[in-house]
Image 1 (cartoon, rainbow, N blue to C red):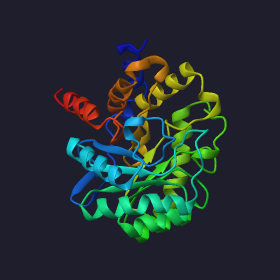
Image 2 (cartoon, one colour):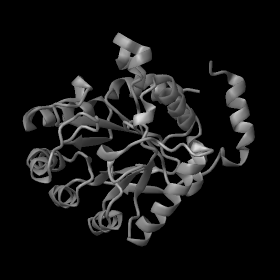
Image 3 (tube, rainbow, N blue to C red):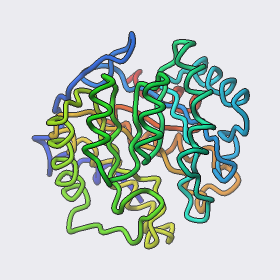
Image 4 (cartoon, one colour):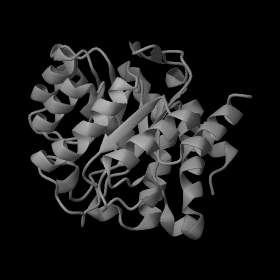
Length: 295
């Protein structure tokens, strides 16, 4: 059971990291990071394999409609993806991803919404940035410098995900290391240096807690790891950049109340000083953050 004494011990052990400031930057008319309030990223899934049924949109029209609803509910960013991260999901090639994504990205960008695209394909990235996407949610590691240069060339922002593999669809067993937070720090330190050298000036780091590693199928192991990373997020701020978290589901614990899982994890992520919350449950997360802000 998580207790106040556990939080006190964590704060005591890493007292020097508690009040670190991170970079701020603007996308459109909104400022992110720095001392600005946390932001919310709403999810639109264009893949029928995505398990979170409420976020699945099987046509451009329904995806555009959902995006506008999410923005009205409080989402500052709309994250659009055309391939599920589930291990058994069908692969979607670059041409099919572009066919699904581009009409949605163009329409939302023209409407003034801030659009993020989740992909690990260079061709999809370039096409979506040219269509008006302002953020790349990068879920792969191959040819990373090519992605970084594209982001920089379009004055876009980057969500730099931690992925132990070529991309999110090829991950195997997760290597925790002696200290998972230290392992994440070392990974991001290397990639941030490459990204900023390539000209990226707007970025979040994302520990990738929603990815389906083979040795994290045991719910107790996976959820304990996720909780630990959320609470230790403030230690990653020493890297100087804001942190994004994709909120997980913990179906094994929540069962039929699975839509309450993301709000629960949002509390832990907020305590860890998360800057951007990626969620399928925008109004619930907004309510959680608004309530915590009253303290």
